[in-house]
Length: 211
Image (cartoon, rainbow, N blue to C red; front, side, top):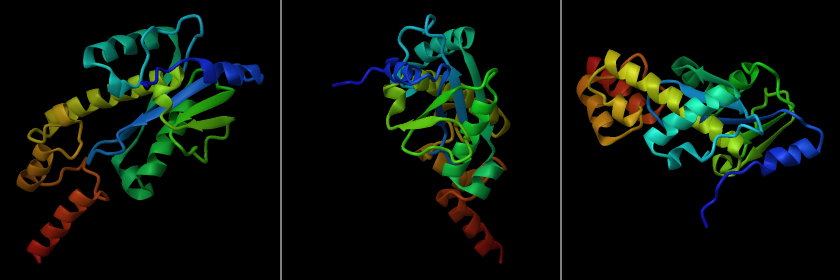
């Protein structure tokens, strides 16, 4: 049975006296380049956009329309962790860093945070709970997943213009066949994640050849 996100986790937290509930999600853990992006969203319970769902379950057109509705009706913040931070920290810690930045960037601090996944960022410093497949269970997390994906996809389109040939406007930096072939043909760019195996292997090959 297909899950449809609802407001039940938010209501349960509010019943415990936690008024402002933020949903948090990230996108971009798997790509070989670009930042990891997170969003935090506090929905207005009387202005929840209809049709909120996991961003991966929505068409590009529907996702863009919902993103506009979310930004019009909710308190939100989108934040990133850079390629340098990903390589220095590891992708999990960098994604948690982006999540903490997104929560910190909200206009008003939340009383409770619903985080997509099975781990909570250690530095969050707020009441929080992790929800596995949260973007398909909580409308607040679903809203965050939509904003994070829209923001990161737009950023990758911009980077595709700066570094043509890798197809980032189509693959968002994921290790697709065309992206991997471009890495071999064109080399590693400054926005590639050097700690990721396909990129690391090419850099090691380049070092071996140059010696």
